[in-house]
Amino acid sequence: MGVLRYSGREESILGLAARAEETDPLIVGALAPPVPTGPWAAPLADGPLSARLTLPGSKSLTNRELVLAALADGPSTLRRPLHSRDTALMVEGLRNLGVDVVEVPGDGDFGPDLRITPGELLGGTIDGGLAGTVLRFLPIVAALASGPSNVDGDPYARKRPMRTTIDALRGLGVEVNDDGHGTMPFTVHGTGEVRGGELAIDASASSQFVSGLLLAAARFTEGLTLRHTGERLPSMPHIRMTIECLAGHGVHVDEPEPGVWVVAPQPIRAREVTIEPDLSNAGPFLGAALLAGGTVTVGGWPASTTQVGDEFLRILPLLGAGVTRSGDEVTVDGGAGVLGGTPLHAADLDLTIGGELAPTIATLLAFADGPSTITGIGHLRGHETDRLTALATEIGRLGGEVAELDEGLEITPRALHGGAWEAYADHRMATSGALAGLVVPEVTVDDIGTTAKTLPEFPELWTRMLGRDRTATRWEPLPL
Ligand SMILES: O=C(O)C1=C[C@@H](OP(=O)(O)O)[C@@H](O)[C@H](O)C1
Ligand SMILES: C=C(OP(=O)(O)O)C(=O)O
Image (cartoon, rainbow, N blue to C red; front, side, top):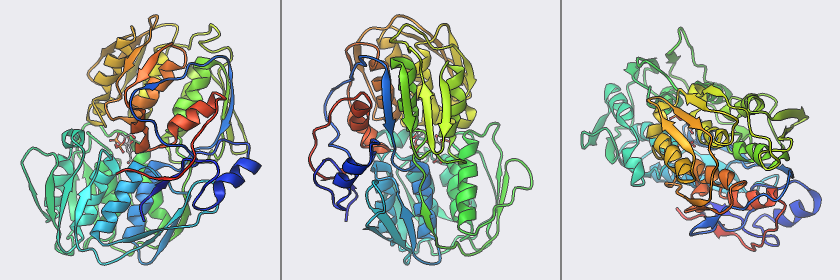
């Protein structure tokens, strides 16, 4: 069965939609209408917000748990997993390698749960789409298979850095055929086992190179002693997340010194796990309060988490937001907001630990009371698109001034005007266009559907956040 996306009030494959509407005043992320195609007119806020919402599961947690479940010693269950393009690609890739993944009824408002039963890994096709987690995690799983696996993805994914994965596999004794450019497509020739042992890699282009190796390392014959040799290592919380997910499956990762990780060969225990809501995807919604004014509350916020999206609770106050917590709810209060005449505070931010937050923060800073910088994000040039150029171009197209630095952006606020906003197939560029369009009339995002990468419900949740109606009526298969 394919992964399903809800798009309606009265129908639900699990009968959950109507119940949620009746009993829960929260806006529920998994219950959403079709993603619009074609240019999307970003809705303009007409006053301060007063919104409460919950969001679907974390992409990063869902895709880690899918991989670990596939390599585990028995069947596992993911409760409240994300259902999006990135997770659908992970599911399809695992199925192609020989893993059984089925949807089972869930316990809440977030669509079906997933039951994963490991099988004999035979090798197969891996379409990574534009999903960094699929591109960097699944080739390592494919190396454990007994046959070859072809790895490819979207046109832009062929530009994303893959050399570290390719070199790492070769360093572990796995044959890989590629065109020598360190990008996709390539073929991993699995022989049924990976020797493992000592390995040095340069993960300065992406933390996902480290995570991918650590996730599978317990299944290597000699385990793994992994050393990062590059000058910088971005997104450390994502590596921490990998280590915590492994711990949940009984695998301890030793860290004898910074930048070194040791995993002994051992079974990966199956488990049942509930996926936290995606806190990085909460960013545009929380940031909306600073632009439109008023409050946005997000429910289900974990008390403690490895998700870097938690940093929004520390960053948004620097920009002028009030942030309060009550139980599992987080509320961001934007006061009068930009709409009410209060610009954000300018800030200089090092986002080395959370590059995926940068598009949201950069867009907000275009509405600050002075110039700001974001540093530590040079590797964003290898994300879904070159995000530094994309942000400079798109904010610039609206009349803003954004200078590209080697490792970041300098944002000088200017009066903005409407215009076309290109998403470059990047979900966070698309949501950033929506954010700007909240207070800049007539911003049109070329492809809001690209939010399906991690949040197919985005357009729906966005308009509901603004207090506007939704109209959709049925479930639809998520296009792959
Ligand atoms: O492992 C993960 O789940 C991720 C790691 C980070 O990648 P980079 O280290 O390449 O930035 C992050 O930006 C990405 O959105 C998700
Ligand atoms: C960089 C991102 O994604 P990916 O997992 O494709 O690297 C992101 O979601 O911001």
